[in-house]
Image (cartoon, rainbow, N blue to C red):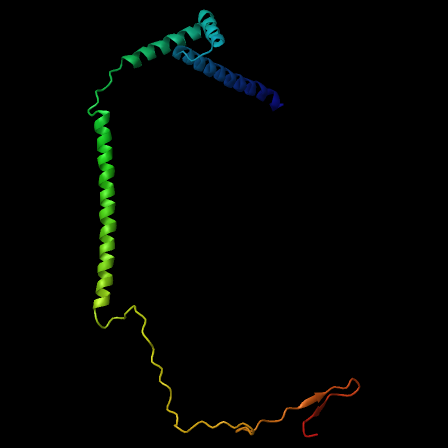
Length: 176
């Protein structure tokens, strides 16, 4: 039952928004007409509306009055010319470049100064690689003896394994 009461409200809101968009479109069309930015068909349509619609006539009168007032506003005189402004901008850019050059150059000179001082001051760690001296433990100076046929240390005999599929593995030595 409430649906019947809501229908006229929705209809009036849609109609109002449609009328708003119609007025907005007419306003934009009239504004473009005054500025001379319409096609021939649009121009004839606006002239027809101005001849028949009183709201359009009032809107046209208000826009024309606003346009005349805007055009009659005084333009403040400029204090500087475009040439002077361009020269001031170029000076500022050059100043910024000089400042950057001095900053980077000063940083480079300071880094060189620190590097030079670190090489001069004694007791500091030198960045140059140093040779390491290797001292071996004291070894008696007996001549080295090499045993060709008999080793100096007895070498144990290796055990040989024989595997038989049916029997468990048995260990055989070279002396067997």
